[in-house]
Length: 142
Image (cartoon, rainbow, N blue to C red; front, side, top):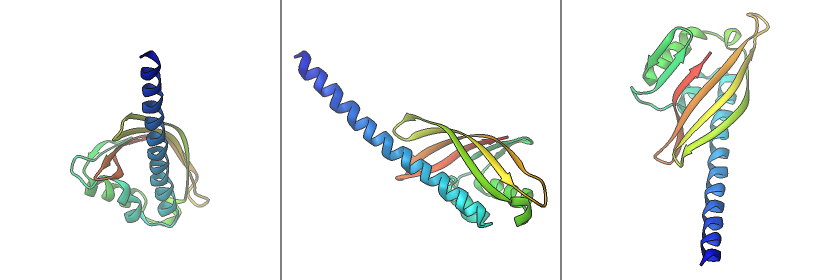
């Protein structure tokens, strides 16, 4: 009986690991796509990986903004041109799956901006798997 339980636990944990690895790759694809869209100067495409909901939460140095549209408007106002946007580089420090449908990401960001001066900081994201797609539901960037 002990062997059966051990084998069952091993198989179950192997399935969870495989799923977690697949989901981690999907989350990293979201971040890679965001990086690419930013570096093309395409904020609207960058925002496609955010949850299109009034419950989306963005936390920055000026406080909390709720909603996809308000977050888009904040990005467009803060980064009005390519010189201000610069070239983005993410350094993902950690991904942590709290459930099969929730992931927390810690990372560093850096903008190379020869005309405006470089900028950078840290971010934490909460992503949820909604209708089979990983979307950012909370973004805390400083």
